Amino acid sequence: MWHEYRRPSEGPYEMKIKYLCTMWGMEQLALEDNLNLIKDTGFDGVEIQIPCNSAERNRLGALLNGIGLDLVVQVRAEGSTVDEQVDFLEKKLSSALGLNLLLANVHCGKDYWPLAENIKVISIAQRLASELGIKVLHETHRARATFCTTSTMAIIDALPEIRFTADFSHWCCVHNSLLQDQQDSMNRVIERSDYIHVRVGSATSPQITDPRVDEWREAVEAHVRWWEGIAEHRKNNNAEFLPICSEFGPPEYMVTLPSTGKPIADQWDINCYMKDMLKERLGYLTED
Image (cartoon, rainbow, N blue to C red):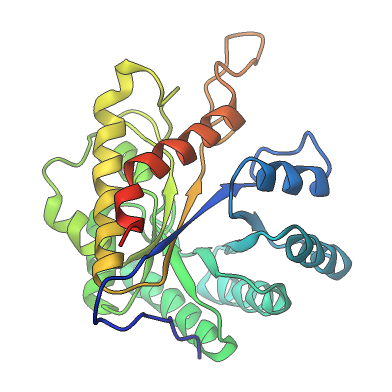
């Protein structure tokens, strides 16, 4: 069974924040070139889906070890029934065993399934993780079991031990707000979140056009406050580290110009900006 290391509670300590970069949208370069670019730009690791081919998985593991990058694997459960998703999760999580990963970030369930079915697939995912010795987190994500605050609160009531990847950009879009009137629900997820996807959403979209411009200041600040709450909670509970992944996406998440399909901003530049901005904003939490 996976056990999280926690530092002794006596005395001050430093919590490490590990800054990861998504591999989503980075198809322009070869894998090794992308991994070297990510390392050279100051990231500590990557999030990526598990390659299907065993030789490709072995190569990925060797490259990560050689370059010195941490790994989060993303597992998106496929299938329209609980049994189909469970079969997919079992195969994918088992195939990740040799990759020396920090954790598996899981998407499972469906927004249209009855609560009992979503709870069942999450419970089985938790059991599989325990048997394999892998840490599994469930991402707050549209179209999945955790697509909104209401469904997620019901899941917490049934499975209070559940742990999350916090991606609140989805909920802003689903609830058509910056969640100002749902602080109790947000707090319940914040205190159960061990990993953060730093993408900024709005009332009308899961991804704002550019977090560097003043017109999105309110949305950016709302997200930073939530992320800061997670980091503070992790540090106060003596966690050794907190992984944070820059996850602004490419088109169609990234808005494009009409007719040309040209992105209106550079995904890589934004993900690097998010890393650097949060290193500055959260730096006080990594100091004794």
